[in-house]
Length: 211
Image (cartoon, rainbow, N blue to C red; front, side, top):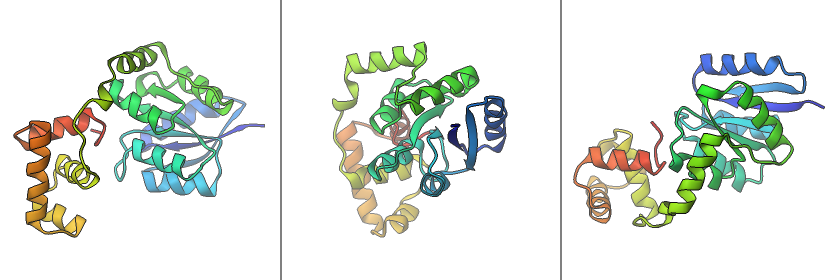
């Protein structure tokens, strides 16, 4: 029986390249392609794939959020995280969200096939560079030591880091501009940061947004 795979990446050329690799493999079948997180979640339900190859940098919601929703919904699809980055914080976040494998786009050839086969069998798969970064992050334990932001503060931070202005953020969150400004001041105070640029770098580093 073939391993049924959904490819989730917002770049059509990337999906085509991945599909070309996988169509040459006898025991793998690409059953769907998603261009954003919403499509990936829908295909997980409608197509019941064995594996979802999930890009972290999706446009509507990042791969960490999608993987978390799949996990919380009890999806049986195994997640292979795909990213242009080998940043240890992204790797850790995806593993915590339920991904069983993590590979970079630069090595998405043989590594992708091995990762799909491994997770379909219920095993993890992390190439040496990814495994090393993950081990380093676990040794440092930095992900649990930082200041704690409230859920609304994290949402404001995410929208700020994505370039949103106070008025647009207020409209999206259905609050007043004054409330957004209070959240922003509280976030800066908690994190010890002074500018939106610094907040953006922090959000990217922590995996709250993905570049």
